[in-house]
Image (cartoon, rainbow, N blue to C red; front, side):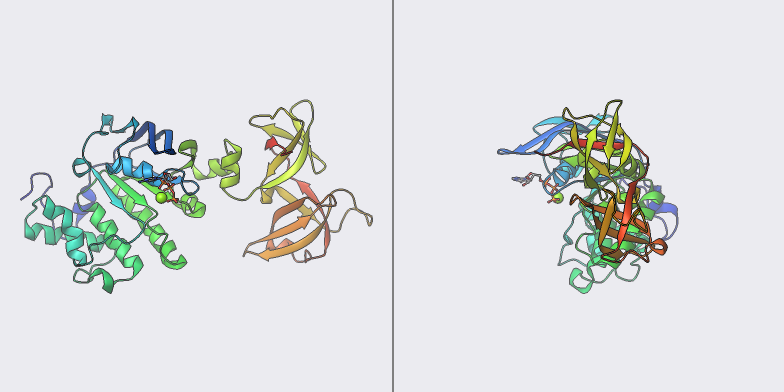
Length: 373
Ligand SMILES: Nc1ncnc2c1ncn2[C@@H]1O[C@H](COP(=O)(O)OP(=O)(O)OP(=O)(O)O)[C@@H](O)[C@H]1O
Ligand SMILES: [Mg+2]
């Protein structure tokens, strides 16, 4: 009988959910370079107990490296990782309280699902009967109660990832690290498993860091989304806040879709853009000629065009993509500026390619960036 794990109970009872409450995880000034490549460049981020934080960012921005540092597979050059205030940076991986799931199926091919799940328990010398019972509970928890005898090659990708998740949870870690666990799966399986992971994570209360480069996945699952850029944190905020109030142009353009519309800074903190004068949010560039970042849903499109001759706000519809409740229009203004606008599909009927319409902007603060020369 193990001394590190409480005795297993009957499958289905509260045992699996007895996982100790999630830990607080802090990245402090993490730096890691591989030769001349800087993977982490002073990463600071605190994840609260029980939170699911998605790490989002372009390929190569350091997401996997950050996870590997928490798991203990990678040593930072400087900085530290704290778990509940304790510096674990020098603690070996096998003594850390973290479970990890990888992007590609990483099950042991020669072990059954049950033995894969129980692997860590065996390493920790948990007795056979208890291992079996606990593996059964976990397979139940991830929705595969009847798959204990299957080998990885006898399971679908989604099922293998469920087993990998059960394996990661077997030692009742206080931190769960998921590195693009869904990216090899097809869209439907992916969406189902996404919801299940979130449900499981909430019921276990386990602190979870979920790496993805899929913004929809990040925004739909996470309590907060941390956007990384070149090894540093750009912003960490709740999904709606990240979307509505991006702290930097990088975040604004990485999350969701943005128009870049030519504008001119006026005095009094306003910017003139497409016939509107909007308050400027965030830093103001030194030049007067700027690009204004505007979400497609903040572009209004009205028919008919104001006058027959048109104005500089009279646009021509280039294409209309039906996306369900919303239709995304691509329009072009007389000066050649292209504009994306999202309209309720019920209002978009007349806006077929070639149609003319008047473009306006919703009155709200906007981010601006210097216009490239
Ligand atoms: N073991 C390694 N040796 C050399 N370079 C590495 C190593 N691991 C990571 N890097 C480099 O560090 C940078 C960050 O890599 P990392 O894998 O953390 O990125 P990522 O954000 O996970 O990217 P992706 O979305 O493509 O998975 C990249 O430039 C990568 O090439
Ligand atoms: Mg990666």
